[in-house]
Length: 418
Image (cartoon, rainbow, N blue to C red; front, side, top):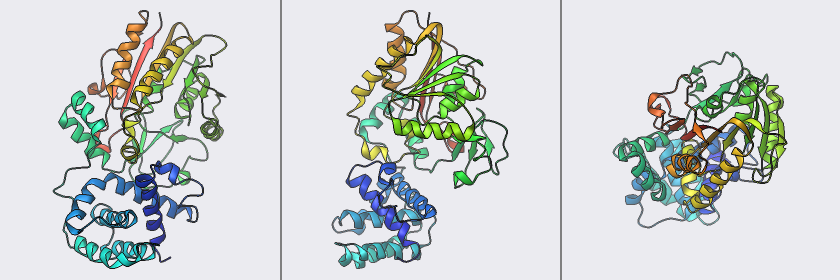
C-alpha cells in the first residue's frame, strides 16, 4: 500500500469498529485487529488519527452534509471524515489527505465505484479556507450533557467541550527528580509534556523515575497523603498509578482489583519503578484485609465521563443506561471500604466522572448512612480554590487549566471514621 495510506486505512477500520460495532478504541486496536500488520509508529499514528476524527465527528458531518446527495456506505463516510479532519485540524497537506482517502475508497471491497465521488467531495472540501471556524466544538451526548448543564451551567459545559476537542498533553507522576526535555512542572507536582512522544524512549522511563498518570488522577493519593509505614488498601487498583504513588510515599500498600490481566500491568509497572506492594486479584465486595488498616483509597468503577478528553470514543459507546447500576456499586464499595478501616482511619473515595450522582451525591449519601463519618479538610499544594466542593471534597472538570491543556474530570472526597 502506498506510503501514508496504511495508517489511514487502519484508522478508517478503527472508526468502523467504534462507530459501527460498538468497540472501545483501545479494544479495537488490540491483538488481531486492523493494526496488527503495522509497525509501532504507524500503529500509534492510526490510533491518533481515529481519535482525532472522533473528537470532531459532529463538525465534520456538518461540513460534509451539503456536499453529499445521500449518505455513502459507512467506510466511505469514515474515509471522507478522516481526510476532512486531517486537513481542517491535523495540518495535513490537502493532496496527501485527499489522495489517501480516494485510494482507501478505491481499494474497498464494496466501495471502489465511489472513488470518484470521494475525490470530488474532498477536492471541494480542500477549497474551504477554514471548514470548522464557524462551528461550535462537538457536543457531548444528551444523556450526559443535560445533567451537566443542570449541575455546572451551559457556559461551563461548552468550555468542557472545547477542551475535549483538543488532543490532551501527556502527564507524568515523578518518583524522583528527573530531567525531561520540554516537561512543565504543574502546580500540583505532575509533569506535563505537550508534544507527541513515544513514552518508552523518554529519559527515566527504564529507570522507573516516573509513570504516565493524568494530573487529576494523581490527586487522589495526594489527598490521602499516607504517612510512612501506614497500611493502605488501594481498591480497584489497576493499572496501578495510585498504588505506585502510595508506595513511593512509604505506605505499606495492598492493591486489590477484580481483573487479573490489568493487575499484570500493575506488576510490570511496580517492577520497572522498583516499588513494592501486595497485589491481590479479588472482588472487593467479597474480600477483606486480615486486620483493619489505616486508610483505603477507593477509585470506584464509574461512567468515566471525566476522561473523554483522553478517550473520545466514550460518547459513542456509552448511553448512560448503566448509571443506576454503577451508582449502586459505588455505594456498596464505600460501605465495604469503611469496614476495612481501624477507628480513626481514612477513606478517599474518587471517581473519574463529571456526574454529581457519582460524586457529590455519593458523598452526601455516605455521610447520611454513617453518622460517625466526618470530612477531612483537603490541603494539597497547587490546588485551585475553585476546585473545592465543600468540606473534604474536590471537583475537577476538564475546563480547569483549559489554557494549559485541561485536566481529567474527577470527584475526590476524604472521610475519617469515628
